[in-house]
Image 1 (cartoon, rainbow, N blue to C red):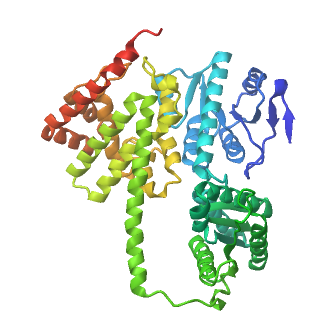
Image 2: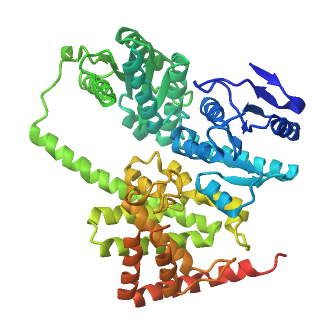
Length: 560
């Protein structure tokens, strides 16, 4: 049970592993009881919830149980030390976004670098100023809140507020795994609005959107707290029902069908009426061996319901009883498959164009971002082609280069527009940019390959990188190549706080880090490509500098 602590803090008793039952703001891991008490006293003016631990193992258990927004961790701890805690937190995808402040009496630069490379976001040396700790704590809470907002935005359908397709798949995967591990059953309902295109064509898309919102609200009122309603796509919804057998799920589906037919009404269009078709499947079906089987069974039952006349519920275990029209010819299926593949390629291109427009819009905040993305794309594709990579991989690397800076939308203006060299703290914020980019791209499943590259962009060849400390060839090849291209552009571009380097100096800097930060093969490849395409690359660099010179001059003016 939580207990009150001085000044409004709430101290939550320690516990073992389990689901996160209450939101927690801060976890303090400190083996010195007096220092722990001091930290609590220094935080007495805040209205936050806390957990504490006196060693690394207990602290890690607290983090996994309560998912705190910020962790304040001592470096020297019995058992797992602060470095081990950082590495294990960063290796756990469920703890993405946890902000870690390491507090220690050690002032050595090497120790600080080790801590930051292990995944810590901030580093504070004892004895520290209480106001400085409070400021860094507020920064950590702010960044975590922003990341949580982005995460929720990436998992929520913007129109209906329901879980989106990505979140639905994760939740269903988790529930299905639970039934296989502990027994029980999970059922799935796939619901489609009948003749919804006619609603859009007759009344307009705004009216169609109103209908979708009403349907979402009605579905939310019909299910239990343990059920999950998601917008599967377009006018299709999915409902995950844990511990619900086929008969119970079918009764729920029939209740939904009747309720929606009665309650989906618009006062401005009294003549509008709506029916739905629903397919039902359950994990207890002996033919269901995976999440994909469960989805396919419900989807096929829904399809049969649509073909059988709509406005009906079809169970996957009785779908053979539905009377169908003429079967689709094999040639027609193959033709449709080819058409879908073609449309998927077109959709990816259109989506890429839209996201690129968003990258360019970031110029309003950071004028260097769009040019950096353009140039990095040019250099990365040039290197990939020179390395003899397949055309498809070259395209994926180029897309990743174009998109990798999207996460800057979450970086404060004072960091992006800084006239001074960045502090360690600001650098830690920027290090999160690729991970934030991946969160933004997560709902766009067509960019899965690109997201893998971007996710590992801050890994180092020697294994001291972020977020997982991968070594050598275990780092995705696209990420190793993109790291060289991105750094080359950063070195040859001017910034308010430092001058640019010429093309040979930049290549030499990257070569000096071969085997440490960069893949030696790609560092050498860069030198070779620079020699072969020197004039072309110099023209590009000079054009970038000329275009950004007015922006740079404005940044260097004294503040008014």
